[in-house]
Image 1 (cartoon, rainbow, N blue to C red):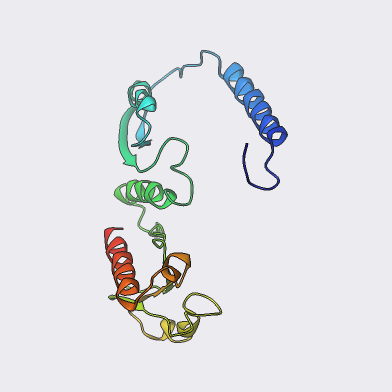
Image 2: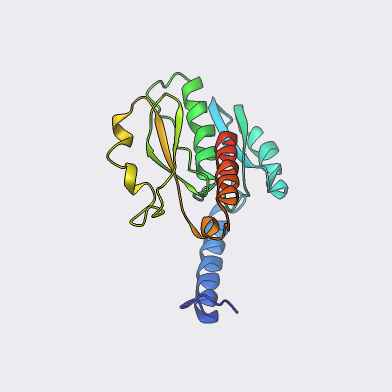
Length: 188
């Protein structure tokens, strides 16, 4: 049983029953449908790296799409549209659109890694801002909210003095934690 308040067995049963009923309706409506012709335009299929059980989608869709491009996204079939994975999936889609000549497609936002909060974006260097002794009591980056937008073209991010940071028992440990966050930020 879940320990989350308000998340009990009856709620789960209701969602499972409703979801199952919806899936059955869609399955019945689709039946043995097969397109009458092959689509001869550009098509994109985004597959989730973590869901090999859906890899047959490539072969099935290739029968009906003569010019299909396949991209891999992070996560599973069930998570590629969720907040942590959606930016990678969005980048697959926007890259496809740009390749087709759609120049007005904006870059998909890249989420901040845990423990960092972007305060201002720009095309210049990434600037990491460390809180004062108060640990940005009001909110992460509160000390820099006025300053950050005024230093273009810098891309400014503030370190969060969060639960993980509060467990550090020395300045060295805190510095090592913040360094690890910078390294994770470089990886994205």
